[in-house]
Amino acid sequence: MSDPQGFAVCVFCGARDGESPAFAELAADVGRRIAMRGWTVVYGGGDVGLMGALAGGALAAGGRVIGIIPRALLRQERGKHEITRLEVVDSMALRKERMIALADAFLTLPGGLGTLDELFEVLTLRQIGLHRKPVGILDYGSYFTSLLAAIETMAEHGFVVREHIDHLLVTQSAEALLDGLAAAG
Ligand code: AMP
Image 1 (tube, helix red, strand yellow):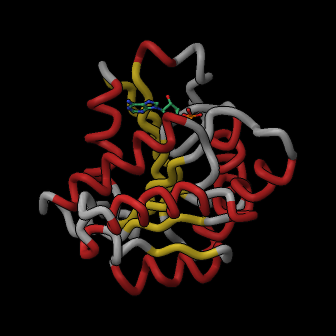
Image 2 (tube, rainbow, N blue to C red; image 1 turned 45 degrees about the vertical axis):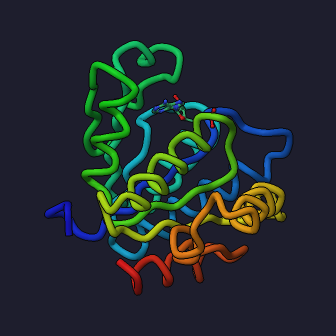
């Protein structure tokens, strides 16, 4: 495992709340479930949107939370200092690099462009063989169904190789996804 403190799941999720409180409830629930397993949450280190809800859920359940935040976003994303460890880095690229290094597995929750950037970073790094860590998508309310369909179209046209997406764990159940990540990790 990459982290001496146990299995670490890096969660990518929105820096906004979305249009329904159900999204933040989902993020808090995922944080809580990771903590209850004795695992560590790795995330972007902010206290906004789903990111803040995720960290809050894990902390409330007594879990370990490691945040990585670029100095330039400390104010905008409200760097969450009360987590187990907040690492402040000098760039967005370093944030991703550090989150990826600390993680044993990746889990994607609903989010926006930043969340997609992070998901595609780990998918493309895996595609070129730079890591073998499991990648999961929590398809809450079919949030990711159209994105997955777009990727499927790319595969049909020969621009995405099946083995580069077949490993993706996609489910609507947080518990099943965490089980899948652990089994593949
Ligand atoms: P969003 O999904 O757009 O709400 O963003 C979720 C998180 O991804 C936020 O913490 C953003 O700062 C972060 N993010 C956006 N772009 C990047 C990037 N290029 N590298 C690292 N983190 C990013």
